Length: 418
Ligand code: GDP
Ligand code: IMO
Ligand code: MG
Image (cartoon, rainbow, N blue to C red; front, side, top):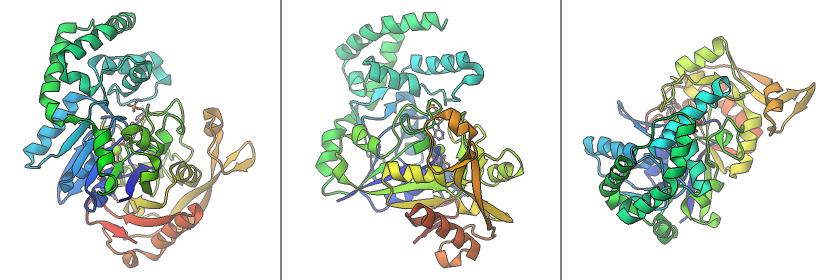
């Protein structure tokens, strides 16, 4: 069976949680492959809102869920999510990779300390320890989920890295790590999570040919460590390429790529965003779209849709089809704008630049279209206002990619499948 990928095409918060939940109904297993609890994926069922940071959103459809080796796991957050789901009477069939790196308290502390030192040049991270944890993974100083299961192994790993960490904590004038307490706390996490931890690489490869597997991306292409607006990015690869390194499933097994894009653009944290609207329009979108971060409660920056960025994202991810979300948020506007190119030093450019200085100087070139009202809650394409349909078709034509889903509200049923 083909593997399906769901990836964010903008700066995160595109509605991946809702779209994953929707497609999860038709699959057997949902897998997270990168990121950690910096993610905040919302699924709304009837009037209940679920917010997931680590747990794949498919869990609400009662599907097998897997946290792959490319994810960084904060065990406390994972245990809380398991408890939350159990508290809601839900069954959990979860497997967590024994190779996934563990977020330690010093990662969270260093995330905060580095941001403080950067001052007004900070990244605006979620302060969940994501960057420092991935740094340790690459530096070969990481603790992995499997290490939590073996007293000897955990002891040895900690003895190896803690002298380095203590030095760094001293340098940053942070609290000294209580090594005994840390060891006991993480051993206890291991005991509690033992039944979930296993070899997800063999598991996923054993089911990928017979079962339907969905890979749920966190963050988005423009936050990708390689393809995003570096250094104002996250520390992993949210793009489809990240699925292979983050799960051990080979590229040939991923046959369908669904890119999720909002009908406008948002960004939380620092860094350039060419179509940002700082005035009335930005406020309108923020207010109407409820653009408050799921993880940190920060206000999201808002602006018009950016086709230069989207085209770039479709290329990198090999997007076959797009799920366009939050079309209803544009309801009630007299006109809507679509950024079709950037103007840079008097010339029009159609490529997303790698240099931040260049991107900061890019001015959006807009096409203006008449607005509409009444897309909200529609369940059939024919029921959409004419101008809303024209907007959807314009985006699809411009990108040369089919739009297969249009979302008109946060709830499961507020979804149009084309
Ligand atoms: P994710 O991180 O990509 O999963 O997205 P978030 O959950 O952080 O943010 C998307 C927000 O928009 C959530 O509050 C969703 O419930 C909500 N949402 C998703 N799709 C739609 C939609 O089509 N219309 C509206 N109005 N809200 C939506
Ligand atoms: P979902 O999965 C939006 C942003 C942060 C910051 C940058 C780096 O819900 O789409 P990090 O803590 O990862 O080191 O922060 O990335 N960021 C997100 N923005 N949605 C997310 O996840 C994000 N995860 C991280 O705001 O700018
Ligand atoms: Mg989110």
